[in-house]
Length: 503
Image 1 (cartoon, rainbow, N blue to C red):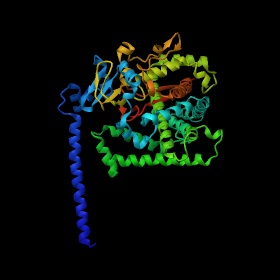
Image 2 (image 1 turned 120 degrees about the vertical axis):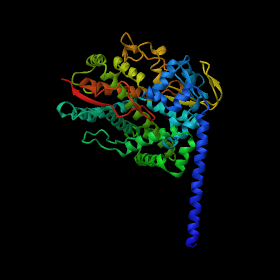
Image 3 (image 1 turned 90 degrees about the vertical axis):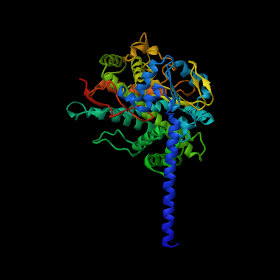
């Protein structure tokens, strides 16, 4: 082939490429126009499309909360998104329990998170979900795994969390530190050790704090995966993935880091002879239940637990300490309970002592009412349906229940719904849980969170250790924090705090 033929071929290819790009852009625009239905003239859709809601609300979740508070049924329909959003407990029970089979995660959701979570428990329906849930239920419910989890939390608090914070108090402290970052590092160390038997050492006391390639890759892959849902059409991110450009190229690179780590950990586990001590972490335990040729499946299962255990606990504790800083009366009552339960020289609570922490349990649940780690959750209807409040659901429509808004509904929590009031969870000093369909922070029904108790114990241990020894004060507290887009609630700019050691 001569030079002229080569140049001609290159010109032809260039022409075809740009022609395809142009036609695809036109197609995407048509899909976008079809999806947003610009002919919808309702006030909700016009406000959403014009972004005028941002003039009065700092977050989209606050705008949805306002709409749900003023809706007679506690349900709204954002037609341009084909999304029915509800804060009605009867609807939530119907979606998550009564007609559970009609509201799976759906292929739309699975496609968005498929590259990161694969066939993990949070991204599948049907038999695969049932199998993983049964397997996880047996493992997470065992006394051995709960004891192991408590050992990890205790060690992380004693050897890393407390020494790090102690080095930042009083005259030793230099300005403020980001509480959200500290808690995310703490949670990532714990969940990696619990899931893989791997210690990423994110919270090792040092200056500056260690940079974890794995943690950064996991954060980026979670954020970019969630960002796929913001595209006008799934075809946009799928084509970007096909051509390996933009955010999809970054996502691919981040997931490769996660995959390499998972493959290496699975390989190491397979080389170790199975024994009592080698079966503590989840990966080792799940390997005993699966065939040796299912490494990819193993990876998907454990990465799903990594996602659930890291971001949710850190998010919940960040919201807790923000609220506690502004409510000294609650802080005093927590210390009264701690003085009754713990020895004066004791740094970390035992598992048995966490069961006696009724007021702390109430305070943690109350903080998650106002700042749930997962602000909303969506399903997709398999068939036409009608919700208990009379809302018609078309086949294929997205149906979303909104824990963030539900925590701010007067008809559920009373006129003091915006107050941080742990007492609403107590009866004669004893913690009493609320109906899960009024408080779906841990989901409810068939998909209720299996790691709920482990997460609550971890949060109790952190709260007890820090509140007993330190005063935690938010720097320039903001009553209306801004949230970053993502799978879990993350405060934009973090949570800057000052620590003061108690004397």
